[in-house]
Length: 129
Image 1 (cartoon, helix red, strand yellow):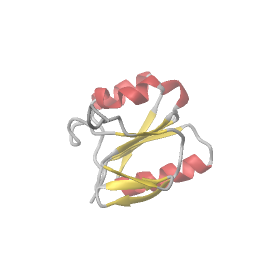
Image 2 (cartoon, one colour; image 1 turned 60 degrees about the horizontal axis):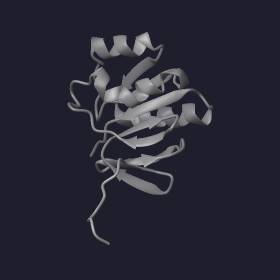
Image 3 (tube, one colour; image 1 turned 180 degrees about the horizontal axis):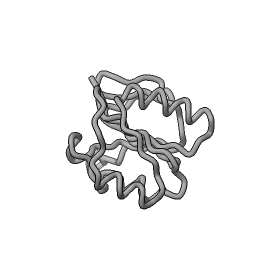
Image 4 (cartoon, one colour; image 1 turned 90 degrees about the vertical axis):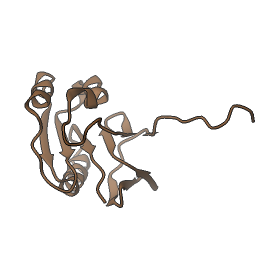
C-alpha cells in the first residue's frame, strides 16, 4: 500500500460513560485514548486546547457547533479546580450552556451520573497523570 500512514482525528461516535481516567488519558467503550477528550452528543473526540491554563472559546468550536443539544458543560481542569476565563463563560452563556469547572476526576464522575440520567450534558476533560 503506497502513501504511508493516514492520520485521522480521534473520534468515537456515541455517548459512552468514561470507565477510567489517569496515566495521561481515558478509557471508554472498551478502548483507551491518550490525551484530553471532548465528550459531545455526536461522540467523543480527542481534544487538545492550545493552552490548558488559559482556555478560550476557540478551544470549544465543536461544542459550540452542537450548542442546541447541550445544556451543561463539565470542564475537567486537570488535577485541581481552576476558574474559567470570563470571555469563555460569556461565549458559553451566549449559547445557553451552563459551564461547571472542576477537577477532572470530579468531572468524570459527574458526567457519568448525568449521562445515566439522559441529561443534555457535555464534558471537556483535560487528561491527568
